[in-house]
Image (tube, rainbow, N blue to C red; front, side, top):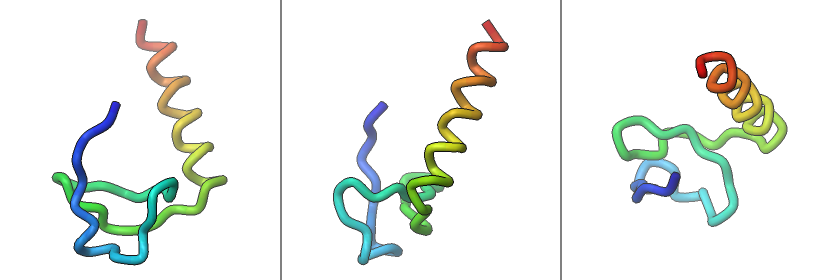
Amino acid sequence: MKKPVSLALVPEAVVGDYVIVHVGFAIGLIDPEEAERTLALFAEMEAKST
């Protein structure tokens, strides 16, 4: 899913970075390994809920 996100609070973020988003604002960068683990957990939780 893609949604517009403001980078005003994390101006160092660039296309391809993973960021933590809250109410439409990027509030921090997250390293790619942690992002992949988090996305895998979300996918696992979704699979268990269906």
